[in-house]
Length: 216
Image (cartoon, rainbow, N blue to C red; front, side):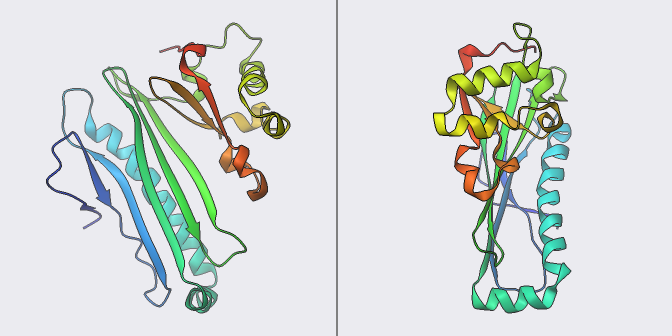
């Protein structure tokens, strides 16, 4: 079985599934990999959404497998000194008739100097279902381009000590790598995966949702 339901008694349209890591059993690792699984419903095509969500979940697993298999003997030895861990969880920021916004977080330790933390997001506009990017949801027509929009938001809503760090990543070459999510109060842009460990505390930019103009 590719995955298993965490709780078969859940009654909403969202269930939690547990994905298997399936690496060498001699590698000591505590792991939890949970992603959402949407059952058939009237809001959207669940198969369409699940395909993208599971692709992300399995890409995380694939990256871990590649890493531990590059030097399997090291992974076995190191994990027996300090047990590895991998924790993947999710939150659903928005689920309504128009949008679905999902955040998946990854926290892991594989013997390096410090743990790692990553944030991924998948966002959909509905009716019809389509996966949307930052470019496709934000109306930045009041600014020269989306880079100027981000610069303005950083200057207004980031902490002073973080602004100079985030401004380095407002160049067009980085924009496709920026994750985002939103709910009824906050539009969040995730720079965290682009930043070195020492700067990750600056990696989340929260903007009041009423300051964002949406295209869709």
